[in-house]
Amino acid sequence: MVALQEAGRADLPVLESYLRAMTAETEAATGDALPVNMAAITASFDEGVHWFLFTDEAGTHFGCCHMQSVFNYWRAEKRFYLGGLYFTPDHRGRGYLSHIVAALRAWAAEHGGVQIYCHIHAKNALSTRAFAKAGFALVDYQLHVLHWGD
Image (cartoon, rainbow, N blue to C red; front, side, top):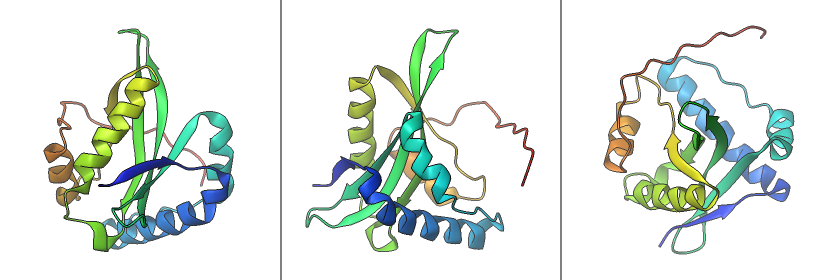
């Protein structure tokens, strides 16, 4: 059985290795360069971001993600944004995502959440299918970004 472990600052080296691997894969697949800013990730622990590590049946870490709460004022409910989800290549295709999503859903519910949402790159059909299989629904919204700076 796979397990979800909330990560702390002591886990930053492990998180960094997964995030660097994820960004390298993303850049290779999409051409989008995504630098890993460890100072920002370290600071995120004080800003309400919850980081998680995943372990397999043997107790080996195989990935990570983060969750951050967002309050929906129209519906007066708390939602959680899921980001930075990464599985090592040798742990993909084993059905682990459904178990991780179930654990994240339970964690979010314990913390007052009613929804988890994420974004997936348009070119990432494999993840889109995996998230659909894990219970996520594709909604009729587009992501619009206002970006400034480097």
